[in-house]
Length: 136
Image 1 (cartoon, rainbow, N blue to C red):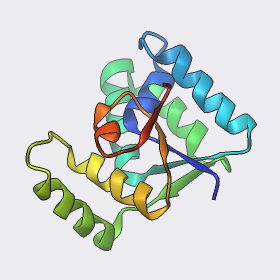
Image 2 (image 1 turned 45 degrees about the vertical axis):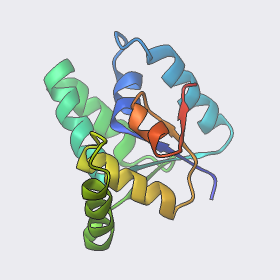
Image 3 (image 1 turned 30 degrees about the vertical axis):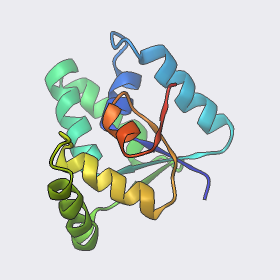
């Protein structure tokens, strides 16, 4: 599968014109879409993104983002579920020296499962886990 993971930080960078990574994140997203790449994200990332959008940019911005991605055939939603959450829990507690969020850990599990190597994010934790970050 030709897919590119999008983390909360990636969605936020694309949605918030004031974000320092806005232009480069939008370019990475648009380049991927033009190449026919599917944007892959999770229900946990959706939760974080909607909440951050509401807190930082207001409810209308959260609604606009949701309407753009919810029904898009270019975005694939992966649901964490019990089995993936259990794998993420193990990573979360095993990597004691890191400050990974539980949502990060669920994203890592799904990226590994789907053999995704790149993520649109500004989160350095993805690099720590061996993934490539876009924008570079």
